[in-house]
Image (cartoon, rainbow, N blue to C red; front, side, top):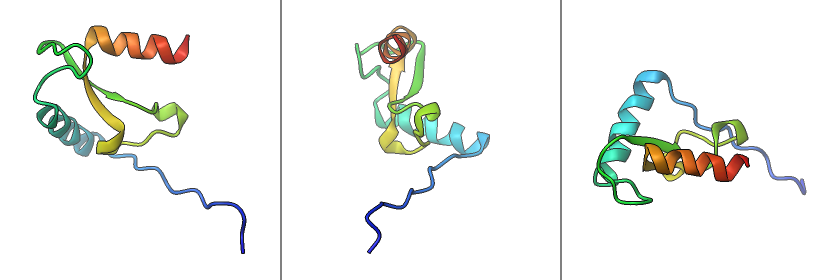
Length: 78
């Protein structure tokens, strides 16, 4: 028995499929920032960064406004 878990390939979508997924995430989240409730300047944020093996899956994406998105990145990199 192998004591090591095999790595699962991470989901990485092409640009068109990613844009469609982002629209679905915005709709899923009610077109509201999940941090502060804002309804303008919305962006889709990777909870686990792509650079840290995060994938393009519904479970790893959340809607944030530009302010909360910047705060999320500042908190995770600072």
